[in-house]
Image 1 (cartoon, helix red, strand yellow):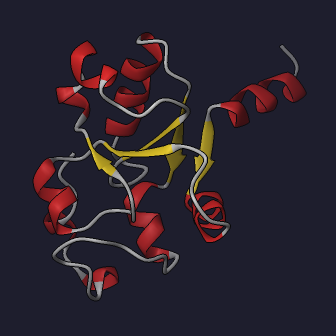
Image 2 (image 1 turned 180 degrees about the vertical axis):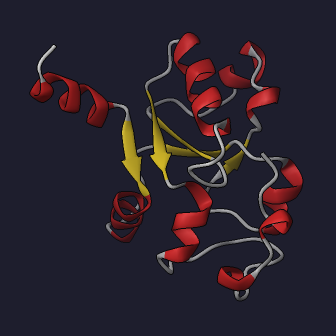
Image 3 (image 1 turned 90 degrees about the vertical axis):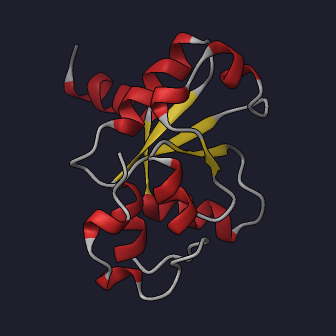
Length: 133
């Protein structure tokens, strides 16, 4: 495999916070956002419109209940691999899926809006409050 093919393949399965925010500003997202962190972390704060489905709870039955179409997974940060594990389970179930690089941490760092109980000044929240991978 040459570098061009490698990076083309990589881009087919990844996105980032800036791209997701750009898609959100254009209107309805063309994919379903899945927050793979714990339900408690999701309740505190999550991306607008995201569905909570921790990767450890991704059973064939739960995956079948998700909306049709592409999916983008995210977790806390580049140090968390829950989004990767979730994307792997979704792909194994035959779903079209990409992972949002940077996760919730970079979404907040870039100043994008959030929903949930703790949606105030999240950039200064202690990480253990929101990690939940």
